[in-house]
View 1 (spheres, rainbow, N blue to C red):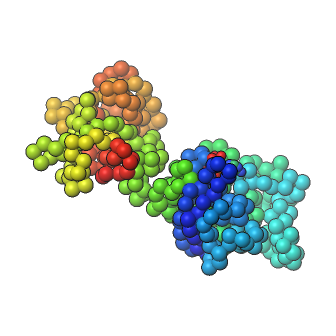
View 2: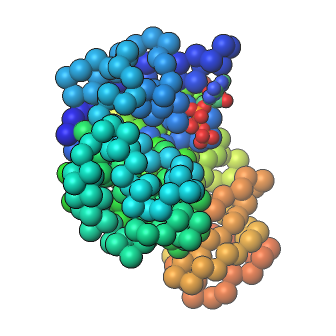
Length: 367
Ligand code: ATP
């Protein structure tokens, strides 16, 4: 297996810069997920690693080899595509073995590798079927099998679960994670789905407009986003943002808006003091907002006044769409004691130790 290094990679399609000075280092056996909104350049980055797209400038290294000019078939990678790209006229066995046959592997070796892949994926009973006789999930498994038989240094996955229904996606997520452990392979996986990224990755790389915004283990990125974009992209429902001003009063720091004034924890002071008196963006995750207990509401400590707009009851939890002034917000609460009524005024308590402030101009995280 192998590590993959992208150094200052740029890809231009005429006037469009699809990938803009991307430098990332993916370690041997790592499960790296490139994630970002549609058009951020993640598929182009993956296709350059595969050799399906040329590089405008920069260097791609797989293992110890600079591969910029190495054709795809000689790169020791295998790619699983979004649409699976199975040959419709071949049965599963032949689909699995086809790549090896093209590479002139002897038949006994092909048969053995196909058997191994079928063992790993549990698809023996499908070997004589044609792709059209398979369900979406089964086709997906065959597409993965076709990569496994190659025994590549690096597996590349391009949105492989996006054609599956929600339930199957969850099941296949777990299967691919198990497969990663079993094969001990380097995997580079592209998705626009931050839940897939969070649940599967050993490290995630978040892209926007062709550029890397942040990389790290999923929980680190969730807890310490580098900027407002990452903060809003990772986490569902997304973080709430509100314009506010940071004020200092008698040595304490407050986030102040037209509708509320909440005090920051002491631990934040060193990080925020340079922003005293300046406008900032206040960020709070839906799970850090709680319906204020009636008995505490007298104190109004670190609470904000809101109005209930929509209540989404999911069973174990409830998403409450609110407005604070005219500002929309979402709170994620456990099932409320009393039913929430649209139009009702609601005092919401904030877990201040988890809130964030962002620079209004640069969008960088202040704390
Ligand atoms: P999606 O999730 O929608 O597939 P993505 O993040 O994978 O998006 P890319 O497919 O890498 O994004 O595209 C990045 C940018 O490059 C987009 O603006 C896209 O329109 C542009 N682009 C991609 N391929 C080409 C091409 N062959 N010719 C011109 N522009 C392209």
